[in-house]
Length: 158
Image (cartoon, rainbow, N blue to C red; front, side):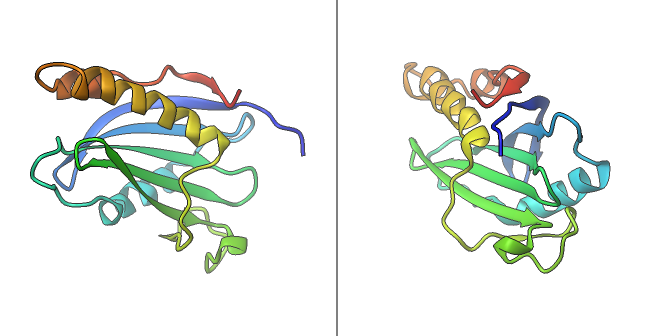
C-alpha cells in the first residue's frame, strides 16, 4: 500500500457539551466525507467529551477522518490539568476494529488505547504548539486566540 497525503479541511469551531471544539476533517483524495457520516459523527461527539476540570479552559479539537475502505474515525482530543491531552475515539464501518458492521455512519467507542494515525498526528502537532502559544506562554490565557489558530487546510500526511 503506497502512502499518500489526504485532504484536510477546517470547518470551524463549535460548542458541544460545554466545550469549545475545533473541527478538522480528513478526506481521501477520491472520496469526501459523506454528509450522513458527518452528521452521525457530530451526534456521537458529546459522548467523547469530558466535563470541565475547573481550572483548564474547556477546549477540545476533533478529527473526523474517512478511511480508504469502509471505515470512519472520530477522534476527540481534550485539554485537562492545564497541559495534558485526553483522547477518546469512536470508529464506524471497520469490523477489523470490532465495529458491528461496515456502515461508516454507525459509530461505536474504540476500546483500544489509540491516539491517532500518522495523518491525524499532524493536527496534534499543530494543536500542541497553538496551546503553548496562546494558553500556557502568555501571562493570561487567550482562549479566543487558541480557538482561532487552526492548522492550514490542504494536503496532510508528510
